[in-house]
Image (tube, rainbow, N blue to C red):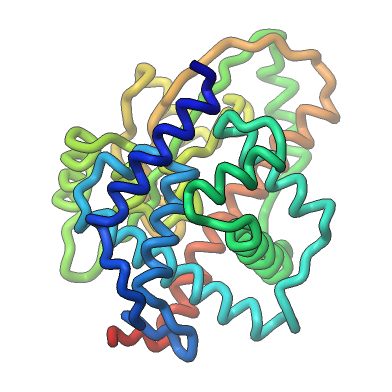
Length: 310
């Protein structure tokens, strides 16, 4: 049986499961300023989340509903902010096609035509899915424009450190993240224990869906492969103590705390192209800092948003 046929069977199972997650009756359940969220919107959000993180189906229906609700509220807040700054949600076709291609290749689908069919079977149309990617792209554009001048990257120091540690074989980590906050009425140790318990019971990906405030939460916290040269000393020191499958203790970062998981690691041979490698490290550090600013900025604008349960 082909992988695509297996995906089809999985979709049918999920479709049956959806009927127990949420009533088919469509009603308004939340208002985010003037943006409405219906019961069908929350069900559709679960379908979307299940595409990019299939393990969500292992959670009970109450957790699935809560995660889906929070995810669509987060998207509405971003959309409200985007439309304050831009006239519309337009974005270059070339860019969005690239993002779409990366998305469907990750789940084992080789063409946009097959992906469109996959979405239809799943109960989502192509334009719905595309709109979500556009909102995320426009949000990232806002963050880049607002905070790029605040990003601090010392190219000379990076180049110097790279030359000192340059070697033809380096370690690369495949990482996932959970970025969480500790509110005034919470305790860091207790919050960390709650997250560890969720990881033990339902897996790291679902714990990220529940607890992470990072934009990677919808993907189960997946970051991907990062070379050791791109990691700061504090994080590198934490990771060097761990084995594949282990998680770090909470690491303090701007706006919260970080838990990393090593999904895999490998040794890779590198060509000693200093300019290329230094630029790669700079890009990684740029993305890391912008992601932190994204979380801080989101929490700031959320305070001025009225979220009303109907």
